[in-house]
Amino acid sequence: NKTDFFREPAHFYYLTNQAIPELLRNHPVSMRKSLMIWSAGCSSGEEPYTIAMVVNECLEKYPYSTYLILATDISTRMLDIGKLGIYTADRIECVPDLYKKKYFLKSKDRTKNLVRIIPEMRARVRFRRLNFMEGDFGFRERMDIIFCRNVIIYFDKMTQERLLKRICNYLSYRGYLFMGHSETLLGIDLPLKQVAPTIYKRI
Image 1: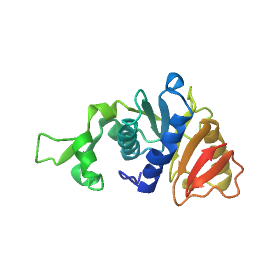
Image 2 (image 1 turned 90 degrees about the vertical axis):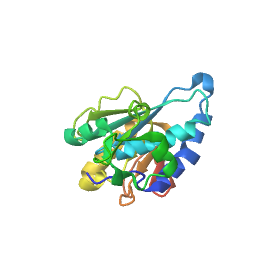
Image 3 (image 1 turned 180 degrees about the vertical axis):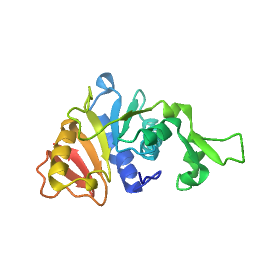
């Protein structure tokens, strides 16, 4: 369940400066749907809420563009924390000050030292339980962006390959897959092209 806000920040820089602008350029406004983003292995919600904040900032430059984030995890306890969006203040020390002021509410009870993600951001993230070993993930749409970071390291090589192929089936053409820095796809035959360290594009 190890997770943090803005973990591996280079990913979020690439997301907003390369991936999203390119995805939106490929779809005229008249054809544009909501960006579909999947945070796989979301734990207690720090990753999907970080994605929500940076994507929200990015899309201010693109009128009529919207997004939805699906956050999944096997632990219902972690998902319950994510749904509430309440964290101790020390958990957001790494969050830029601009984001702290814009996207977090401080508890009225100053003795509790708690903060909460604002309702608008909570509404952008849908939490649900998912076991990667289940036969069907139950997604109706393909994802434009998938964050699957520090998840496959817990499986053996054969299971990793099987899981990654299934994940690729849910990734749209030209969509992006973000992996953890401790993970490698070497030796696994996937319809992906590496575009940056631990960042891949569906081909």
